Every structure is written in C-alpha cells, then in structure tokens.
Length: 465
Image (tube, rainbow, N blue to C red; front, top):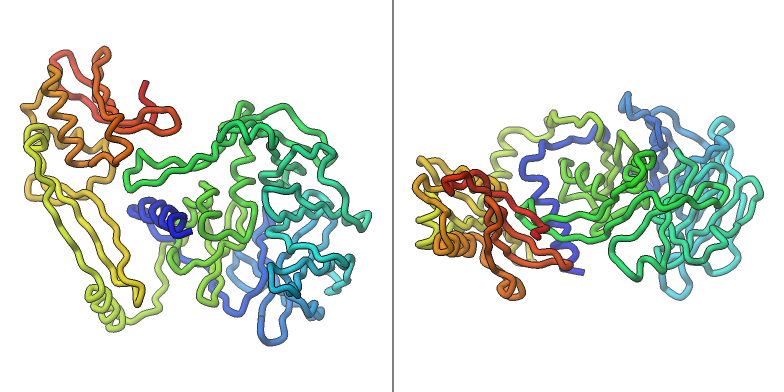
C-alpha cells in the first residue's frame, strides 16, 4: 500500500510542477454525500451533518445556495445520491455490519425535489455489501462493489433488481447516463493481456463490436517521458466520449483509484488543496468536488479559478513560510563525470528536498538541475539536453557513442534490472541508446544526427525498435 501512495505522489508532484493552481469556487463544511448532475451546474449535497441533516441544491455557476429542502432524511447514513432520468433523485443508505466488517447496503429512497418528498422504495433484507459506487443509466440504478463481480441493476420503473447481463463474462468499466450505455470488457480477454478490447452495451443489453482497447499499464517517474498512465485507444471515433465518461465515474475516488483516471488526475493535480484532499466525491465535464479536513471544495475545472482568495494576512504568511523553511532542507550534490564534461557544456546537480513530516520522519523529492551561463534551471525533460550539448562534441564513432552512454549513466544511473539492457547502436542518421526494458519494449534515447554527425535532437522514447 505504501508503494501505491508513493506512485500517486510521484505522479502528482511531477504534474504539479508547472501547473497553475485552481482555487475552489465554493468551500462548504459539515457535508455528507454529494453529487454533481451531469451536463448541469447543480450540485446536490447532504448538509448539516451532525445536526439535523437536510438536502440542498447549490448553483455552481452562481457559486451560491440554490435551495434547501425540509423533507426528513433517513436515519441511516446516505452514501450515494443518484440523479435519474425519471426526474427523481435516489438516496442510497448503508448500515453497520454486525460482524464489524465493511458496511452493508440498507435501502433505496426516492426524492421528488418538486414536492420536497422522500419515499422508501426498496429495503435490503439480506446482508449485502454496500456499493462502492453508484450511478444511473436512464431509469436504472447501477451499483458496483468492485471489478470481480457484475454490477447490481435496480430498475426504478419495475421496483426491483434485475441481471446486468446474461453473459457472465462481461465486466463493467463504467456507465454513462448521457449515452444510455455501459462500457464493458470480457474477463477471458483480461486474463490474456494488460491491453484489452473495449465494448459498449446499450441499456437494452445489446453489446457492440470492439470499439477500441483499454491499456491498464502504469509507470511513474519524475522524468515525464517515462510516465505511462492507463488509458483508451479507440478504433471508432464515435466512442471517444468513453474517456471522459470513465474519468467521471466510480466516485468516491481516493489514492490509487484517482491515479487510474488520467483525465481526472490532470484536474486533481491543479487543485489548491492537492495534499489535503482525501477523496474526489463527484465530477462532470465542468466541475469537480473533493473532501478533506472536514471540508468540501468545489472547483471549476473547465474554466479554472486562478485568483487566490485572500484568507491569510501578510504577517501570518511570513510566519508560515518561516516555519516551512525551518522544516525543509535542500541538498545540492554535483553530478561529476568526465563523460558529462565532454558531451555537455552545462554543469549538472542532483537536488533533494527533505521536508519534515511531523512525527513520521521526512518526505523527500529529488530532481536534476543544471547551471549554464551563470543561470540555474531545473531539467524538466530529457529533450532539454539538446540545448546543453558542448559545441565541439560530434557523435561520429562508437567510442563517442560509449562516451555519450557514460554521460547518460551519470545523469540517469540505471537500476539493477536495467543494467543488462544497456546498449547502443546506429541506424541511418540516428543513434539509439537503450536504457531499459518494459513489457517487452526497449526504452531509451533516440539521438538524431545531421550529415556532419552533429547532434540535432535528443528525445526519449518508451518504444525503441
């Protein structure tokens, strides 16, 4: 579990380096379940948790309370709020597990906001695990407890549960109310590869031909070119909507689950409360809501709010920064190598930032910086190396190639399992410097030369032939 959070933290730190912060448009306290209605500017929340809870609508465009309701809410905890195409909201309650395990599914309530009226429509009599996430497709409620099982489907018109599909091989990646569809994969194809065909099942249970693939592979590094996030590749452009539907599904999301939604990661990384957020509880194409430290923050992700609210005086900010500096140590170590001096005109440094984390020791982050013409800069990506080459260096023979490889070894020391893959070779006007192997593909640097064997471009590739 610790490795998972380190992975997510690495992804967040890298993506947040140059990101302009997105500040919340609303900050609310004492909030329970919440949802943002698809294609709307309306957020529905359970508020006043701990006092007398009530349902409330917020207008996210106007950034204000829209309406409070007086209908008495269920005694058991409302875990999910689901807008449905029949014009009602559905409240999903959970209850404690008598065996001290995970919470159990309790009941389904309908809420007619026009009449301010709540009615119980279903009571679970068996001990059924509470849904991890819940949504709707047309007039059917979709409950998921994980990828191992098919979702449970509650038909609001018939007032009962019904099978997801007669094909027990199907598993749901996400559901889309906007498209009245379920995005599915087949279990037998998952077992064979990490890249699996994707299908779409309509609300009547009809399954399409494959519309693309889903690649579940993930790798993270402080070097941008080495990052690989899960994602879709579509063979039919009519289904490009799946990416956004997947990103805006499965709530609430936390930790590793956020990292599995690439589009959501990009929005998450820009938030002002990045390291305070415990869960992302709702999102649509324009807004995102997240909780942490007893608060709920709402962000406009389509038009980010980049104006920082004035909440701390200059004196308090100075005191905060002084405290932060006391807790932070910067370690600068020169990267010394004869090969580096031959290949590049810049001086390179390894910088480590150590920040005291209360009673839990230190958190560390490291990156490479360089000095050139009396200016220090961070080496943001490997393509920047082209600009730092020594004017006299010419890559015209195998000895020079070995020197270039040694310079790369100094900047990016290969890991134990990568050393056996280190090699270089020339093909046409390119030199290829292999640095490692992942899932059968070599990765490393491609160096393009001109006719005089001067380096024109250095780029990194995760697939080298």
